[in-house]
Image (cartoon, rainbow, N blue to C red):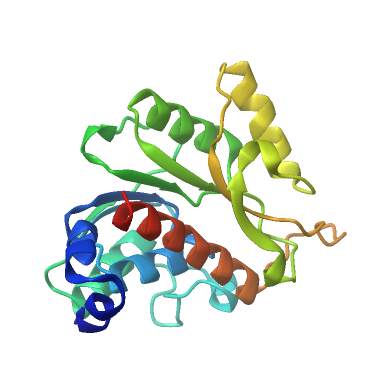
Amino acid sequence: MYERLYNIFTKEKVEKLHKANILLAGVGGVGSFCFEALIRSGIKNITIIDYDVYEESNLNRQLHSNINNIGRKKVEVLKEYALNINPEINVKIIDAFVDDKLDINFSSYDYVIDAIDNIMGKCHLIERAINADKRIISSMGIAKRVDASKIKVTTLDKTYNDPLAKKLRHELKKRNISGKIKVVFSEEEPVKIDSLGSYMVVTAYAGLLLADAVIKDIIHE
């Protein structure tokens, strides 16, 4: 199934993707598209973390949601889905909420992807990854945006128009963490609405950019 990847990247580079071990936290609107891109692009070893179940509100943006899996655990659905694409994929699942109490051994992972939306969980992942000397990329605020062309890969210190990123910088500073943390963020100012709003084109593109950044880092290392 990887012939076309071999043609564009070379077999040797795709072999790097086969051998890599990825930790993906969050498989919602952003994370689901990241997961899809990873498993179809040569990643064979991936651990996914999510505590949530599919709800009707997920149908507008979360790639693997449908009316038949409402109420099912997202991690369980995604594992089944991946194995139906490639039975050789090693998908490990962690049904848990990411916070400071979540104890994960980061030593076996080559890359950590943060696609969750709570600040304390993000701080925990970033701090643990840095302490374990592991690469990490984190998704910033993507809700309330409508222009996918404004989404970029940069570093946390260069973000703006993003309240979530601002809070994250503040919390990380309290933990004496700074530096060039790679992120996906939107330059667009959030739409001024009281409730949450999400547009699939934007969340999907953010997830694809996360996957692309990780894939390119691995094949060019």
